[in-house]
Length: 173
Image (cartoon, rainbow, N blue to C red):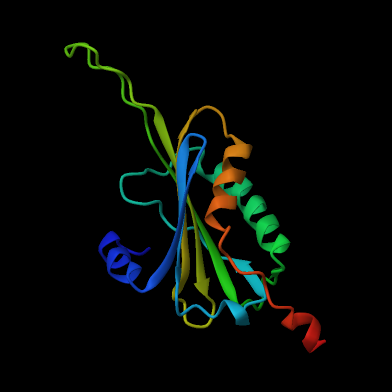
């Protein structure tokens, strides 16, 4: 995981993309040194922890399972091919939540805060293990229900700036 201090320092040399979704925000930062024109294949690695302040919950594994299918589909639409044994980049997912707080009865007009869900899609160069893209999305969620459409919108916004894969696989056959 990249610390917030490092992200701020690196952001000067990176390109960024951010979008506001229906009830949340999604953004991604790609390393300017990433060789996306050389990437054609991907694999999935172990999960990354959520950003500080978000906690892994009992629903996190189910969210990651659904998120994996959505990310796989999005990468394949961009021309990338899943190759678990030998890939150009590794995808690591992160999920978490900040639980809602109850209103404080001692304070007038105190309102409950909604639950906030976090998803992260991190891409790492398979050869160097350096992060080449960090995508994250935060939205108000219902902790009792996983909203697949919300996950899809978050992934679409996070990976919207990802270049289309070069067809080097077809050329090498």
